[in-house]
Amino acid sequence: MASLIEDYAMIGDCHTAALVGRDGSIDWLCFPRFDSGACFAALLGKEDHGRWLISPANKILRTRRRYREGTLVLETDYETEDGAVTLIDCMPLRNQAPDLVRMIVGKRGRVPMRMQLIIRFDYGAIVPWVRRIEGGLRAVAGPDTLVFQAAVPLRNENFRTEAEFAVSEGDRVPFTLTWHPSHEPSRPAIDPEDVISETEKWWQEWSSRCTYDGPWRDAVVRSLITLKALTYAPTGGIVAAPTTSVPERLGGMRNWDYRYCWLRDATFTLYAFMLGGYTQEALAWREWLLRAVAGKPSQISIMYGLAGERRLPELELRWLPGYESSSPVRIGNAAHQQYQLDVYGEVMDAMHLARRAGLEPDENAWRVQRALVAFLESAWTEPDEGIWEVRGPRRHFTHSKIMAWVAVDRTVKAIERFGLEGPGERWRKLCSEIKDEVCSKGFDPERNTFVQYYGGNELDASLLMIPLVGFLPPNDPRVRGTVEAIEAELVGDGLVSRYSTKEEVDGLPPGEGCFLACSFWLADNFVMLGRRDDALRLFERLLSLRNDVGLLSEQYHPAKLRFLGNFPQAFSHVSLINTACNLSRDVGPAEDRQRS
Image (cartoon, rainbow, N blue to C red; front, side):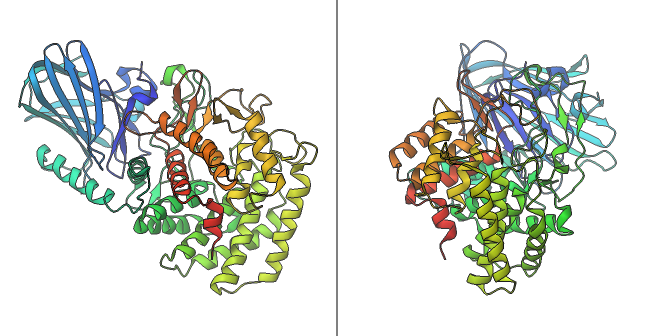
């Protein structure tokens, strides 16, 4: 069985990423891109579906791990009765082919070690043809080749590569794994020592540029490093997570592929990079955004591939049993075909933020924005699948209408504040029309709260966005009533659920964990409502949920004290950064975004 989700750490090269367990096993790795087929897929099955283990052969007494300060270079210390060793894991920033480097360093005594390499291409489905080469082996199947180099004797048994060796104090035993297309020749071997040193220096230089200097700097820097690692460097796109089908409910079917780029994350991510002082990353993300949404406004997608691909067909991998028998395992995401009104607001908000932040203007941005708003003039009245991508019937979701208002409002602000040309008066009237309808049809006056969808009585954590996007001021009684209702009905053990799944609004069996991004949104609302002590308590609670190397998943199960959902989750780390900055300034995000 795979490790607990929180027992993994991530290493990556800004093209793809690997998950390394506390036990020294890499159970998830896709080469050469985040969305490529996995060559190690034990995370979603068994060891025979592919993994790479390096660990002490005898009983481990203590394990401690950390990233080298300001980097994505992982170190895991193992103590045994025989002595102590450290395992170093990293993926160097890519020049040509992707590499993965592992090194065992002897610290004390003489420690017997074991190594097991099980390569299975195409998510554990394909056993490669393996042959020996000088210093290692080459594994080939179809389009993929992996070249493995080891400084210890290897043996092959039952389509596995095994090794036993011992490490004494001062020994350094390296291993490397390099992918290349099977029709191309292998490139020269790399020097593991140099690669580790260069990778450490690159990340330290990058992280040292962080301009946030508040009380939670370490957490903010780690989250920014995580976001950078989830960036696909060639295009600037940012994946929601490097994994697929890590379940939102253990043993259930809420398993989705998150290795794509969501428009919904646009504003939050841009905002987080700008808060951290990373203008170039924010600029690259905005440019990816503009390229992705270019075209006919009615054909905008809610998510795209790493380079802006629009076809992301969903398939089930029936040979994989799923993480802790959570099936089906899916690749691709059928939600890319959904109509989600809120993404128009996210795109416009991102463009508005870019202008306010002084990012270098893009001559096409205003053309795109005007075309999208022109489409919304009629499209905003249609029902949609909403922010949570429900697989039930379309509805008039309140949050979706609010974000339609955001789209028009930010476009009007572009005319008023930045002197861009457009029918400002017509769009101002549209803003008023949308707001009046939302406040009439999306608000329950008897309960004094906004509701999930028109005519319904369920709550939704997305309603916490009302003051954050400036739809209503935080001191509006309707905002306070909504926050209090969410606290009463959607908060458990201090954490926020997205909505009640008992009614099966989303068309799926009920049950999932608390959604961490929504919990950060509640803390942001507390800040804006002047409830600073409540905001601090909730924020510190959320920080305490991070695993030992500072990473967060999508969801958390308070009763089982476990992470749920794909990991690590960009949205959770973006929200952490935003809340830390809001608390450090004690200024709500809506006030900051709206300020001229």
